[in-house]
Image (tube, rainbow, N blue to C red; front, side, top):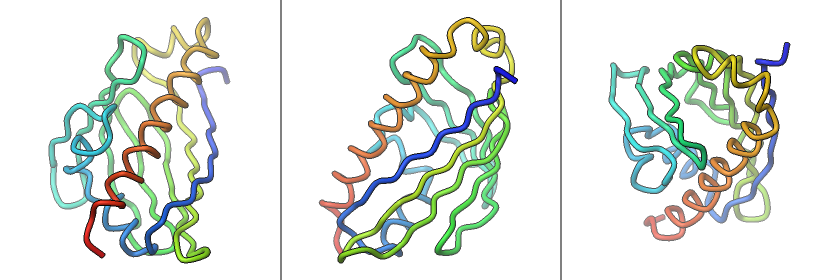
Length: 146
């Protein structure tokens, strides 16, 4: 189905897996280091509402539910404008961490209709958002105490 998107990526960061995990699971701090995350509201210990906006003039309204916060794999169920799963597998590598990202989501709401016509543009927008994540994550880890 055209409204389903699957993304995979791998990054390395100069911090141990437990430090990376602590930053990735702390959703309320995302707007501090991830410029495309414009707001986060806690809905409980394992739930949050997250508003994201990348290059396109559209703000994604997501509800995230933590499924696993334990190493090596962090997993989140996604609801709202998208429905599906996101996971990070964190592996110690060369004094840092290899981060394997996997996302499989279905677009919902008004964006679903646009996904049929603007699929390449929406995929590009997602890649820009994730580039912002990688850059911000690396900056935040570089300044955090170990």
